[in-house]
Image 1: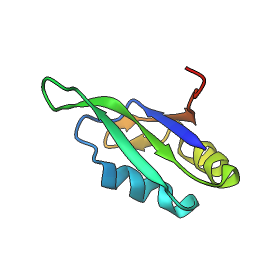
Image 2: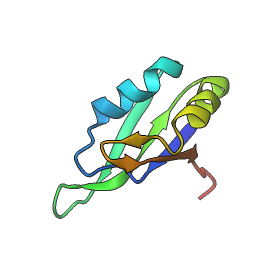
Image 3: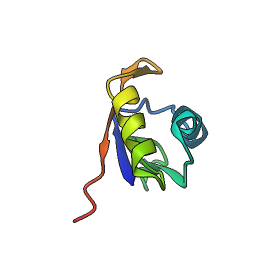
Length: 81
């Protein structure tokens, strides 16, 4: 299941996000979207977890958690676009 993580601090790294989600299960991939011109984080990213149950547990626990001073939002990514 692909998850969208929004409202990330611009300084948050992919490793930090991966470490945040790993207690809930395997993390298949973790990507923070970067601005092509500046190379700075756009403040959102994606995590893929192979097991839907693990992903749902991560959403339930991490949505609205404060990370690096920001309340992050975690939800299932819309993969239909």
